[in-house]
Length: 260
Image (cartoon, rainbow, N blue to C red):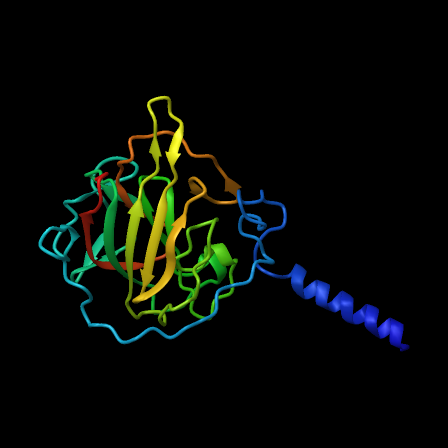
């Protein structure tokens, strides 16, 4: 094999490796970015090791509304209507029976939530330990087993799904508890439905800042980039059933700022 042939073969091999990556090349470009939604060429966040945490996580402050303390699903309803069907096993919430959301609406908020991916690893990419935390039906912070799991950058654990990857990946091993502390600022609209302030999200993942007041480009959806739609700035908190038995515990929320 001559040198030219070797170079061509090497280039073809490299292109094949890229083509076999996880993600898409035919989705829309995200507004204000150079990347496509779930772009398979977008670099994934570097892995960092989080510090040690308490066995039962952060306890709620006195002004918080407790959404789940291990005893009941009274604060939640099913997206499909009727009672929430997630399981409670030994004080732990297990995803099953369809997505759920809070019966109460919230505005600008601080949310604390702890989750763990199944200890028995099944599937890969988006089919492994997948769930999600939703604000106001339309804005998702991804829950995913991202421990040694290759997937597209804006679908990693703690990603603002389909828009912004986390700055780093501090996820713990499957079966271990992770924590999200999320500050959500809702978008605002004038009386004519015109956007006057976009939404912003700050996320601490296992104590590590992975989003620092990151601007939302609109609703977070799979393979698409949708514009904002006017609403009151208040809405429920949702937990997604993506077909994986993800666990949750110690969920609480408190209002912040002027718009709550």
